[in-house]
Amino acid sequence: MGNSYISRRIASFGYAFSGIAAFLRSEPHARIHALATVIVVAAGCWYKLSAPEWTGIIMVITLVWVTEMMNTVVEKIMDHLSPDHHPKVKWIKDVAAGAVLIAAIAAAITGAIIFIPHIL
Ligand SMILES: Nc1ncnc2c1ncn2[C@@H]1O[C@H](COP(=O)(O)OP(=O)(O)OP(=O)(O)O)[C@@H](O)[C@H]1O
Image (cartoon, rainbow, N blue to C red; front, side):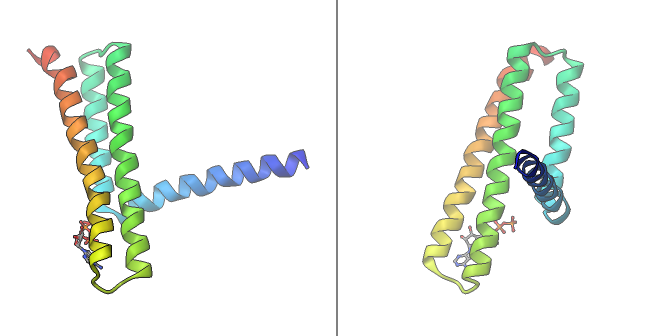
């Protein structure tokens, strides 16, 4: 029983990693986020950010990735369940996109607060 529980948990990790790979393969947005993440992490190493600064950067990078992935999931669900144009679908997709926008604004402000003093 213990072994099968562990095998199921390992399989779940496999599905989660294949989900991340599928997101990167199918969504051009995801590749832009990946490039932006690499640039921000490289800049963080270059400016030798402190532990609290890294924590802030990692939190907002995560927030942007998670909201973008959930927004994509919402879009795919709605396109699958309701391919026709519908005001309720518009509301759902617009609110999901709004969540991504909030995360992106928070990331831009946090990035500015952390990096501008280093650059100056
Ligand atoms: N079935 C629909 N019914 C009503 N409005 C829709 C529908 N599909 C899309 N829209 C409108 O078009 C906008 C864009 O939707 P879409 O699914 O094309 O996402 P997108 O912003 O192009 O995302 P991506 O570029 O990641 O594909 C939605 O936010 C919504 O306002």
